[in-house]
Length: 132
Length: 231
Image 1 (cartoon, rainbow over the protein chains, first blue to last red):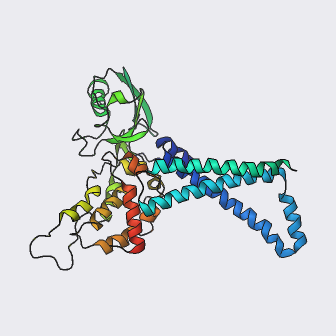
Image 2 (cartoon, each protein chain N blue to C red; image 1 turned 90 degrees about the horizontal axis):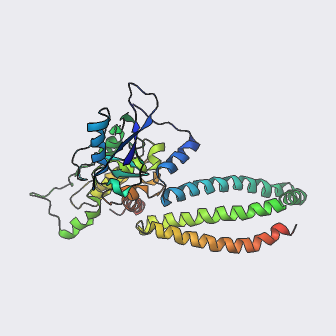
Image 3 (cartoon, rainbow over the protein chains, first blue to last red; image 1 turned 30 degrees about the vertical axis):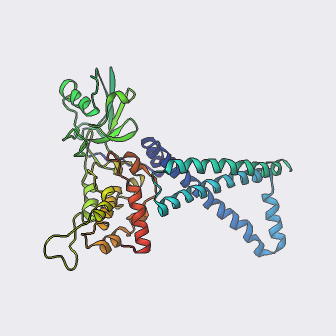
């Protein structure tokens, strides 16, 4: 008998290759943004916890992260938060109201909200990136 | 002319599977299953696949056809673009070519006890079910156990203990049945680690179901019943 064994990265590519639809896309996006947010959380805790060693240490760390690159990454972070949050709400809606039939429509509504959110985000954060 | 690219794996010859191409002239209205029979009878008698009823009732011929899990007997060649790529169901061991070992699939099905459990005090004659009570289970009845949902579910690939959309849909069919006395036991069983809460709500099962059933909705209902113990 033949049993396909794939590593964790190949598993995601395989599943996408076999089921190219909105559901798989949003699941993959949810996973990816979730992992990015978890990594961000560690970085965030490291920077904020520097305050435990006094205001000077805190200010030094804040200076380190106040660069055009980190401001640019902030836009990326907000995009990840918005995608993860909107897809999470979509899943909660499905679980509570059983709106499985409308899941594609809800996906596109969430997509439209995401675009609006990003327009506002870019208008606020892009000037910050170039203010340095 | 149409080209079929068929997944081939012979345990006696191959270590890894390969795709083999076959070309032939289809007639109008020819289905994928009839195409496979044409190959078997005229081009390559070593091809293995499962089929039985040829009318989307038995669920034997579910396979991955041009990107979607479907029943070969229900899918016409003319609606698909050539070359038509045919693979067996995923997440199940391949015995030969398009034939998979459905043992894990049916083991999960048996785990949810797919039969009526008598109530504590059964009636003297038959269980009486009103039209309204019967309508409650209408949406969960038609599963033909083809395995398309199991093949399409990414969770089934990672967790072989996960009950799967087919078993969870069937579990709700019995939980909602007014004649069944095992609702508590069933809900307790499906809320285990590899039960309803393992579902990531990816919707693939409802997208591929050839009988247009909605296992995602069934799982959502079971989740809510488990949380509020409404049964």
